[in-house]
Length: 264
Image (cartoon, rainbow, N blue to C red):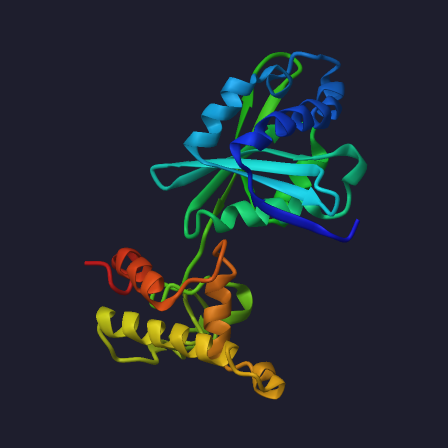
């Protein structure tokens, strides 16, 4: 299957998602030779409660069949992710990775936490590939033990850009600086001498310039990616949908006071 769509589930989808859950978790139950694992006992009322508590996503194929789902909710800056499921006939095509990546976009700039059983090797490996690390194990009984994993979002402590190894700034000795991006920090110094409000305005201007470039009808110009375009592209990768300038400004005014460079 090459065509699929990931979007928020509506309440009318919950019965189908619950049936998919009963089917998808049969393989998990088989690992422990028991039929009473929690996902197989969950009721529709409990799923409805989770629906109103957070976000439930569905993955739908070209024919309208729900073939995957994931859900999450947030408390005190941590996003709790669960019930990542793929129809057995559609596994091993990277759909679990796509669902996990998509649910993170609904809660940008947060700490993410999830858990699975120690016997679910495929799940653990998927989460590790997505940047999750184990931080705790809990034994439920003689057979069942859960491994808890977390992923902490890392951002430039000057401009808020999501940090990857490729765009880290540099210290005086040329080593990588893990706090700042290459667009803000080079050779041990900041590249912009500005206030927090000036940095916010600068980032908003980059967003505006990106919107103008995207509206250009010249394909050659669209292919010319500047560092400004890369900045906005990296930020929008973290969002369920691209933001306009006003939405971006509001987010930055909430977020920037928590960054190391601007923290008082």
